[in-house]
Image (tube, rainbow, N blue to C red):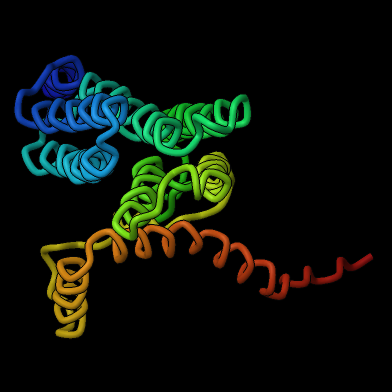
Length: 253
């Protein structure tokens, strides 16, 4: 009888719609939509910043849901759809409007590769969520890919470059981010970090140093941060290739 009641509560939680975490998801969705509108209006720097804001809000909704025990299937699906807008459609439109208009079909092609890769990445994540190792993501997460693309636009605008001057470099960055999302590379998820446990003093110092660097030159350091994270998957793959394979002991006749 107790098991039946617990099962009914679990099913109700899965079907329920909770306000607090979905408010953060809605805010992230709005930031992505706002980035699209500002891209079409030629305000590329504002659009890039809006994508970063969407990334912060997207990181908060899941944590709020876990802290308040308000996880639900509705919230997971809503979050995935919000991610597609904020980290799939918005960055591809930002890049197209800023740099790809003069590339013709190649511009469409580069923007679509990124957009389709984000959709495939989110679909794979949703289907493998109960299978994969929680410590690692399979493929570059879509928020990090969006931050790489938006960060590239932001830092180049901050240094007075135009999209026309960097259109081929922009295409390379966009395609690279897209292919990294659908790759099988491992990326550290940071989910194993427990904020409630004590940490060494050096960790607090590094966090403070990070915020100082970002406050000095946000476009440059945010772009370098996510570029380094994107490349970390390739570095881990190379290190795994260099590891000697364990020899299997010979079988006795």
